[in-house]
Length: 394
Image (cartoon, rainbow, N blue to C red; front, side, top):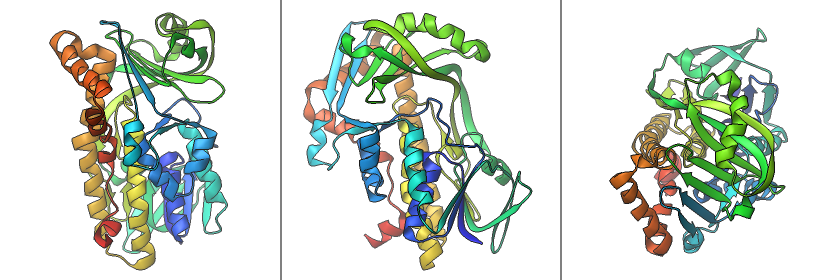
């Protein structure tokens, strides 16, 4: 019997498994796919998550594989404004006053490699969980390999369509947006248009999030289209969209692209018996602002020390209820409202008029006033919650 089985091989799953294994737990991670999924997904790690990566010993490798950056640029098409700022005001707040840009698949691969090197950890790709049953002593998972896996605890980190959540019979409350996001990885010279490494284009028709994600000149350009358009032909529409989105000199080379539905949804609880939900299995949000991945990482950073204490030190399992309640509250009170506000601002220009002007006043103040900037940059730190174990010891 394993101490913990983690279901799902994305960043949240691998980070949780790595923390548990480094603490000394016997860990098995299973992933239905044959490899880490490399379609365009999240790519920005806010400064507030870097201490958690450092604690696991992978921050430096993530930074070396991707790159650090400090600048932001907001382009407002209705007014022609360029509102810029950087993260330098954080230098007295954190030892890592910058973000890291790196595809989430690369972070998952870094954590996977560290995990596979540990003698008390195992990773199995191509293993799909089909059934889950709990009893007083543990959890039994039945896989598509017609085998049963047994663990004292299970973490479901298997994404928005989580089979773990489905097997637990938990509702995924919320709604689905009527628009579809299209995330594209593209080689194009945005810097010739004086774009920042993170550029938000604010427009009610062609809003976009445009960020450089690799040192070789690869950029992520994410825009929105009507979800009633046929998804299977989304690639046919990319060239027309790029006519509005690709500022700068020269042509482009599309590396890859992926459409996806956007949701604001949350599981009714993040713990049921011996099973916890983390990351997109527990909550999903539209990706504007990068708050979904940030919240998922903070789920992992506070879960693994708590679960490790329960497994290895016989800490009170009720601490996992506190973890679950804390993380659910953060999503409902902070992550989802702010991501929704950012989506409305970037991709709908707040409907224009007075509402747009009010939002722009805040952005202008952030640009010119370091105190305002610091206060607003601290938002992502507010998505963090301490492990109930470590909070009690502090």
